[in-house]
Image (cartoon, rainbow, N blue to C red):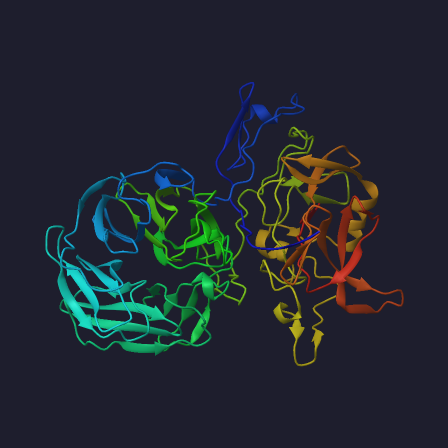
Length: 601
């Protein structure tokens, strides 16, 4: 079975949940067991877990309001007929929302209570009467609201409102600098020293603002290298570099990162439900930088349906969540525009607003009261596949009593004694429970990836000699061991001999646990672990997902004459059609999961 990977969330942190039976408590997040639970007279405990979640790190994810097709809730300032909400901005707890239709007879800016979702007024737009759309995009610059029209002619206009009752002031009236301008607008700085940004084709345009005035009718133009997008948003970093969002009609693209001179630096982490994202904001919450980006669950050229907002932890390049999980609506977003706002409120929560034209708008409250990730951040090595070089948090690796089992008869615990020469981890590296897939690694690499498992992406491939570099016949427990790198404390990759022992001395029973197919592997002493049918990745394709268990060993292939292979290492593979009794071989560049082991003391 082969399927294209579109979205993988690295769920490294469990949602807090507690099970209780006969006064016995088990905390799924901390892994703590009461003393009563560890008593010798307890043989088993049955509990129900809520299953896998795409939320990692936030212990509160709440919908504040949702006016969309999927929620079926409506309100007056939202979509009516051919009119759509095209853009929005946030200021002082209020959303300023651009409503427009094709005939310009309903082109207004509504003022909405951001936390209640109710209309509280309108800006005066009576003198805004020029352009294909009189009002198209809107932003907050300093203490003022600015908006622009959409045009490709001689009357490109940027307006300013200093308060909710003022009339619009014209900041700029000039000839459009490109074929079309005003679909999207972005800002940086403030009214004293700021910029107003636009994108069209392969160029970025910005107008400089000084002391509340635009300094020239002609913008500064920056050519973009390696970019084939069109009108979109710009997000400026403190160092002067900037991000440009994607637009779907020009390809399946991620937001791109450019130096101040327009040279391409890289792309957004490839962990979105779909690669496309037209609006991007960055926000710091609890000391961690998050990227908040709009995208679609269904971004085919004839769809642009099921718009969502994705929240990504930029320190680890991992998706935290996408909301709503079912999307805002199935109607095609023909404008291909979208907008988001985000702020940390005084109540200590992160609030995120998303708007997708024709589908709806929503507000979410996110709370992160738990520590996530390794606070010692390692150097970010950002590859073209959007992977960061940071360690996996493993606070949940705690030794449990081997007598405790769940409802599937699987022994609970991060370290399980099966009666073999080593103890085995209760779950894959990168997972938080037995019923989760782990993350995929190339052999000898320390950082997981979701794609690029070929020689071009392999760290140990030498493009000058066209061979893979030799890093040792046995990397278990060495500096090339991902389990040792992430977990420490004696954890390592299994050797071929240890994997063969698991295959030959244990009973393998096909089991579907928590809707995840796999094998319960029962050791000689009766304890067991669960191995999901996780498949492996070749290039960007996840292969045999739901068909095979596939795990790296640390052992390179050794031939009968004692020589070693340069390209192949041993893999533990087992499935309904491949009931192996010893490891098989696979190319080192391929992506496999890792099931760690620990030597017995």
